[in-house]
Image 1 (cartoon, rainbow, N blue to C red):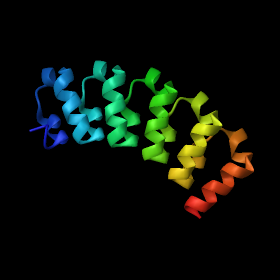
Image 2: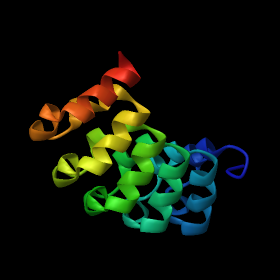
Image 3: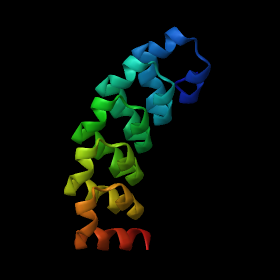
Amino acid sequence: AVRQHGWSLKWAADPLKGDRELVLEAVRQTGWALGLAAFPLRADREVVLEAVRQAGWALEWAADPLKGDRELVLEAVRLDGWALCHAADPLKGDRELVLEAVRQHGSALAWAADPLKGDRELVLEAVRQHG
Protein backbone atom coordinates (compact mmCIF):
# COMPACT_ATOMS: atom_id res chain seq x y z
CA ALA A 1 0.00 0.00 0.00
CA VAL A 2 2.79 2.49 0.82
CA ARG A 3 4.31 2.04 -2.64
CA GLN A 4 1.25 3.73 -4.08
CA HIS A 5 0.18 5.88 -1.17
CA GLY A 6 2.83 6.91 1.32
CA TRP A 7 0.12 8.14 3.66
CA SER A 8 -0.87 4.49 4.20
CA LEU A 9 1.92 4.46 6.75
CA LYS A 10 -0.53 6.30 9.02
CA TRP A 11 -2.51 3.12 9.58
CA ALA A 12 0.46 0.79 9.94
CA ALA A 13 1.25 -0.81 13.28
CA ASP A 14 3.84 1.12 15.27
CA PRO A 15 6.64 -1.43 14.75
CA LEU A 16 6.27 -1.02 10.98
CA LYS A 17 6.66 2.75 11.29
CA GLY A 18 10.21 1.93 12.37
CA ASP A 19 10.88 -0.34 9.39
CA ARG A 20 13.49 1.57 7.40
CA GLU A 21 12.73 -0.02 4.02
CA LEU A 22 9.00 0.54 4.41
CA VAL A 23 9.44 4.16 5.53
CA LEU A 24 11.85 4.88 2.66
CA GLU A 25 9.21 3.63 0.24
CA ALA A 26 6.57 5.80 1.89
CA VAL A 27 8.64 9.01 1.86
CA ARG A 28 9.54 8.43 -1.79
CA GLN A 29 5.81 8.62 -2.51
CA THR A 30 5.14 11.58 -0.26
CA GLY A 31 7.69 13.37 1.86
CA TRP A 32 4.98 14.17 4.38
CA ALA A 33 5.10 10.51 5.46
CA LEU A 34 8.23 11.41 7.42
CA GLY A 35 5.91 12.83 10.07
CA LEU A 36 4.47 9.34 10.53
CA ALA A 37 7.81 7.56 10.84
CA ALA A 38 9.29 6.38 14.12
CA PHE A 39 11.61 8.95 15.70
CA PRO A 40 14.87 7.05 15.03
CA LEU A 41 14.15 7.18 11.29
CA ARG A 42 13.63 10.94 11.47
CA ALA A 43 17.33 11.06 12.37
CA ASP A 44 18.32 8.86 9.43
CA ARG A 45 19.89 11.20 6.88
CA GLU A 46 18.97 9.08 3.84
CA VAL A 47 15.32 8.80 4.92
CA VAL A 48 15.06 12.54 5.57
CA LEU A 49 16.82 13.42 2.31
CA GLU A 50 14.34 11.29 0.35
CA ALA A 51 11.47 12.98 2.20
CA VAL A 52 12.62 16.55 1.52
CA ARG A 53 13.20 15.70 -2.14
CA GLN A 54 9.48 14.97 -2.33
CA ALA A 55 8.26 17.75 -0.04
CA GLY A 56 10.67 20.36 1.24
CA TRP A 57 8.38 21.10 4.14
CA ALA A 58 9.05 17.56 5.45
CA LEU A 59 12.11 19.14 7.07
CA GLU A 60 9.70 19.96 9.91
CA TRP A 61 9.77 16.33 11.06
CA ALA A 62 13.53 15.78 10.77
CA ALA A 63 15.56 15.30 13.92
CA ASP A 64 17.11 18.58 15.08
CA PRO A 65 20.70 17.70 14.11
CA LEU A 66 19.60 17.18 10.49
CA LYS A 67 17.95 20.60 10.44
CA GLY A 68 21.51 21.91 10.61
CA ASP A 69 22.74 19.78 7.69
CA ARG A 70 23.39 22.37 4.99
CA GLU A 71 23.09 20.00 2.01
CA LEU A 72 19.83 18.55 3.28
CA VAL A 73 18.32 21.96 4.05
CA LEU A 74 19.41 23.25 0.64
CA GLU A 75 17.52 20.38 -1.01
CA ALA A 76 14.45 21.27 1.05
CA VAL A 77 14.43 25.02 0.29
CA ARG A 78 15.01 24.47 -3.42
CA LEU A 79 11.70 22.64 -3.48
CA ASP A 80 9.89 24.75 -0.91
CA GLY A 81 11.41 28.03 0.23
CA TRP A 82 9.21 28.05 3.31
CA ALA A 83 11.14 25.03 4.59
CA LEU A 84 13.68 27.63 5.75
CA CYS A 85 11.53 28.14 8.83
CA HIS A 86 12.52 24.65 10.02
CA ALA A 87 16.25 25.06 9.40
CA ALA A 88 18.65 25.44 12.29
CA ASP A 89 19.28 29.09 13.17
CA PRO A 90 22.87 29.20 11.85
CA LEU A 91 21.61 28.19 8.39
CA LYS A 92 19.09 31.02 8.40
CA GLY A 93 22.13 33.29 8.23
CA ASP A 94 23.68 31.44 5.27
CA ARG A 95 23.29 33.90 2.40
CA GLU A 96 23.46 31.33 -0.40
CA LEU A 97 20.90 29.09 1.26
CA VAL A 98 18.54 31.99 1.97
CA LEU A 99 18.89 33.19 -1.62
CA GLU A 100 17.81 29.75 -2.85
CA ALA A 101 14.84 29.85 -0.48
CA VAL A 102 13.64 33.29 -1.62
CA ARG A 103 14.11 32.32 -5.27
CA GLN A 104 11.61 29.56 -4.64
CA HIS A 105 9.27 31.59 -2.44
CA GLY A 106 9.90 35.26 -1.82
CA SER A 107 8.19 35.30 1.55
CA ALA A 108 10.84 32.88 2.88
CA LEU A 109 12.74 36.08 3.65
CA ALA A 110 10.64 36.19 6.83
CA TRP A 111 12.73 33.31 8.20
CA ALA A 112 16.14 34.71 7.30
CA ALA A 113 18.49 35.97 9.99
CA ASP A 114 18.02 39.69 10.63
CA PRO A 115 21.31 40.80 9.01
CA LEU A 116 20.23 39.19 5.72
CA LYS A 117 16.94 41.07 5.77
CA GLY A 118 19.03 44.17 5.07
CA ASP A 119 20.75 42.60 2.04
CA ARG A 120 19.48 44.56 -0.97
CA GLU A 121 19.97 41.70 -3.46
CA LEU A 122 18.10 39.21 -1.27
CA VAL A 123 15.23 41.59 -0.65
CA LEU A 124 15.02 42.44 -4.36
CA GLU A 125 14.86 38.74 -5.23
CA ALA A 126 12.16 38.22 -2.61
CA VAL A 127 10.13 41.11 -4.05
CA ARG A 128 10.50 39.69 -7.57
CA GLN A 129 9.18 36.33 -6.39
CA HIS A 130 6.47 37.42 -4.03
CA GLY A 131 5.65 40.99 -4.90
